[in-house]
Image 1 (cartoon, rainbow, N blue to C red):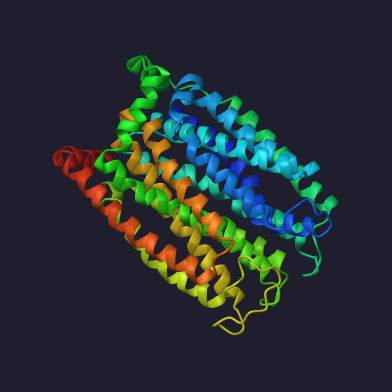
Image 2 (cartoon, rainbow, N blue to C red):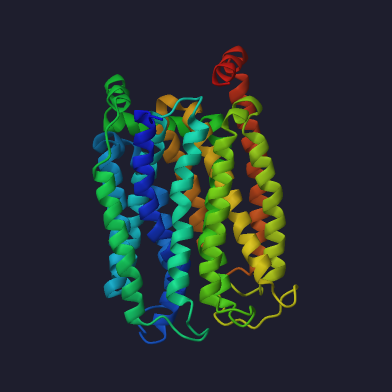
Length: 443
């Protein structure tokens, strides 16, 4: 069976994302642990340098989203993806000759590159999708994007599988791990450089004829609309959740080495695989039932993710020591005695399901709601995503775990309510007869 050109384009971009984020997700899971271990032998490296690095990344990402749409308009999707992904490679390469000032500079550049990359990803997705297949395409994109969690987890499991719990990650091991990550990112850069330019992209910019200033103004105009403001709560929650499962939760598992009956580094690798299974399984399910989404709407998926997410947040709070996010080697008691490895991994899997649910529906709805301004829509979405990621990464190193999870529960409820309102408004403004005809045609 032949594959259409737009689908081939999407798969091409997805492979590049899979490579870049195989490395990035893996390094995020271990960055704070690596830097904490190195700080024991190198006083120039702060013990919380991993949290500082992540905060810089999301802080720079936050403000870079404001200027991303006009830059993407100038560079177009292919070279925006190349530029954005190159900053990920630079961050990985920094760990080969670890230096604190360079780490923070590379983190800032990676935050800038993330804004360019994700604005391009959303725009390229919209250019190669229609309202009838955007749900499927969003799921395909997310499955490839998060596949790195599984492969990265397997890689870390092989590296740390035989390590003792008290064994530190030394300089030689750090160079081996990040050498592999750097090489993978370089391949991803090349894949993006070979990305085809769709005819729809040429037509999009020929119709707009927008200058840098006009693109920037249109971003701010869109940001103050009612739908965009309501939609921002869901985007913000996506950032809040990502900073927790990718940074705080994995670090908490690593720092709780006296609590679990398994090597903490092995547990982090197993958790990465569990999150990846949840992400890919959920994205595949949403893609499979994409036709039903067109009929029933996206709200049921968001409501379902909210319910199972709250269950997982409560279980995680009961299963981890209160000071696990910031006390390496914590011995504080947990409510569940002894702490359960099974519960820890089930929570990781649910975090993956919820993250996939929220992000695929964000991409799907934004692609059809703001079809004529997708770079601006995705830049605004990522602005609020990174705003909460920055805040959460900061308090992730100082707040006890139950308070962080209480904030996640509040964010989940608020974002669910606002998403339902936005989608109801979108459906009411769209011809019901047209949507019904689209569904009949798909059947």
